Length: 284
DNA sequence: GTCCATGTTCTTTA
DNA sequence: CTAAAGAACATGGA
Image (tube, rainbow, N blue to C red; front, side, top):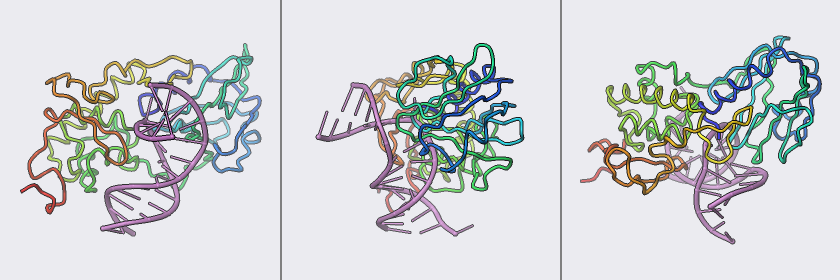
């Protein structure tokens, strides 16, 4: 569910709801969503007040009034929900914060697949933090420099969170389509005008998706339970065999980096001698 | 039963 | 400081 636009919507919907509230109690139902695994969340958080909620890449950071912080990653199916204190507890609820205020409320983490989790950072960022720059802020020159660092297909490079933090499978496909770049193109061989188009396409598609509330394919909802609508505006993702909205050619689906990859074979044309970085596999 | 899924990390391979 | 492909993780829906 969660790429940058979905995470941003969770943050934006949550911020006004938890502002100035105090965490009165914490119930951790499963430790396998906690990092480190033995973190004493109740001890660390009880009595603390939220100072800020913000997004970095696909992470949701919570800054506490004592200078400590932690972040939540939603993984594939994770949800953060703000719910009334007495709301029924749904399946796969792994962590519940009870929040002060009138009426009393809860913040709950629900995640069937448990690819997501809570990561305690304390007062200093984790040393293994190697997230790339924010896609909405990066310059095309910086993006070009980073894309030059790898020979992988550009789609794979865009999914690498150390190269760029926030894109996932949907928006990587959509951005490449808008930029008219085939996902299989060798990252380091993209030309400057192409990278310039790509940087602009990334900004455009992310901003439009944020404004549409994100994409709800299965069960993504923001902190208040609202669904997104950007799935209705996808141009290639999930549209295999359906006509390209620009040229009516059937959208093609391939697998890259183990992920479904969608593109228009005409609009996103293959440049001869640029399909791969391996010159031995060039067509004769 | 099979295949697929908005993500990340570990292991294997060339 | 290889670096890229593949498997694994856990659950549910089509």
